Amino acid sequence: MDQRTATLALPATPRSFGFFVDGQTIEAGPRGHFERRSPGHDVPVTRMPKCTTADLDMAVAAARRAFEDGRWSRIPAVERADVLLRAAQILRRRAEEIAYWETLENGKPISQARAEVGGCAGMFEYAAGAARALHGDAFNNLGEGMFGVVTREPIGVVGLITPWNFPFLILCERVPYILAAGCTIVAKPSEVTSATTLLLAEVLAEAGLPAGCYNVVTGSGSTVGQAMTEHADIDMVSFTGSTAVGRRCVAAAAGNFKKLGLELGGKNPQIVFADADLEDAADGVAFGIGFNTGQCCVSGSRLIVERSVARDFEAMVAAKLAKVKVGDPLDPETQIGAITTTAQNDTILGYIAKGKQEGARLVCGGDRLDFGRGQYIAPTLFGDVTGTMAIAREEIFGPVLAVMPFDTMEEAIAIANDTVYGLAASVWTKNIDKALTVSRRVRAGRFWVNTTLAGGPELPIGGFKQSGWGREAGIYGVEEYTQVKSVHIEIGKRQPWVG
Ligand code: NDP
Image (cartoon, rainbow, N blue to C red):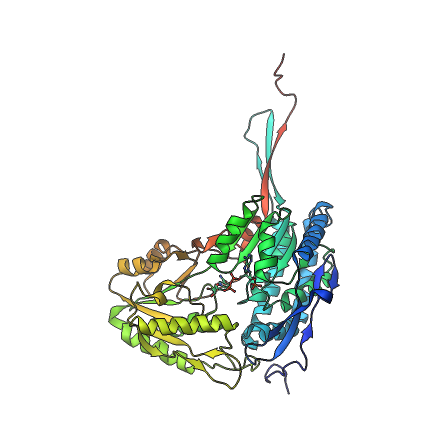
């Protein structure tokens, strides 16, 4: 049977991983393991070393040596590009294996994981070109005796803290760009989804990345993650996760004034005008909240819909959500898989209960789904939501959509901006003036017109307001990991100061 159309089998025994420092895999040994159970099946699938802060120190020292001796930071960009291109090829070759472990640890559908890994290969290819395109500036207008040059230099050793919702995709929205800039990396994946971050170490080593340039330390956020944000020998930390932990990163970074890139929470509006192609918009809105079980920082969790069509549109979205196939993540037909962590499952069910208590009208979903094992929640839609309700204000990070009607465009923009977050937004309309006005006025780092969750290696990602600092991906994402230096060059002889 074709492997891609069959439901994949669970591993017979959990796979044990070592962590990765200076080109070597190091087994857990006396550190011990933590075990990950597949959220879709509730069976053990991986075992990861419980790394310590001493392990982190060892990884940072390796990354520092690799950075300072120039084995990566000072080679020609074309050689860096060659490694990134080879990595893309290897990723495509190993895509099935990477997707499998991603699905087992995260609970996302295997078809989605496969598509994500393909997208990740594309990011390495893009970053290979960006490495060679990266350049500075020259100033030929400083007078006869002076020439000015601005160069870009890699920022140094980068600590990379990634979350559990897109363990591999978020990793690959950063790693190739950081490497393209000439930096070295110590990565700390979420302790529940570390496998594919370690598989990337194998891919990069095979591609010819020198030892010490990409290191992985597995362990808990409160020990290894916190120590990384405090570490005096790390020049920059890229953190993706909750706004609460992002705030702690800011405090911890003060020790050595390390630069931070922060991609945090979102409560993203989907504005639907009555003149939109409502069938297409309903499908897009359902995708925007159902994709990755809504465990997505850019998921469209607030539906702001023109009152004249609100009830009909709500019913159209509910009908779409009812048709979505929720189930075993290893079944290629599945569109919505499991909730990744037990804590997240409880959080989502807690918000659903709160929505009911606060008087929102439950249109569909609203409960867990019982498949005999694993944790699943039905896509849920609440009508009659007001701006003060918790389900309208707080990031739920689950498949729960809050519907709020509007009468005028001004009101729609005001509701969209009534949030501390500013990560992403969508507008659905056939009127170009409305689309452009809303896109200019909604305060968000990513904006979609008549679509949602579109992405690719070229366009930058990042947030306004409390959704974060800095940008990842695109040429902006490479520049983020550089710093600029100005060089003044005297032509001829300088004017003496002392005669
Ligand atoms: P966290 O912010 O706790 O986790 C994100 C990453 O940070 C993980 O690698 C985690 O490690 C690490 N981490 C945890 N504590 C620290 C710390 N003190 N210092 C440095 N790193 C740390 O997210 P949660 O897993 O608790 O999820 C809670 C909520 O966060 C979700 O409900 C959602 O609202 C939001 N979230 C947003 C994401 C986004 O993409 N913007 C992604 C994930 C969550 P470990 O997992 O090993 O503890």
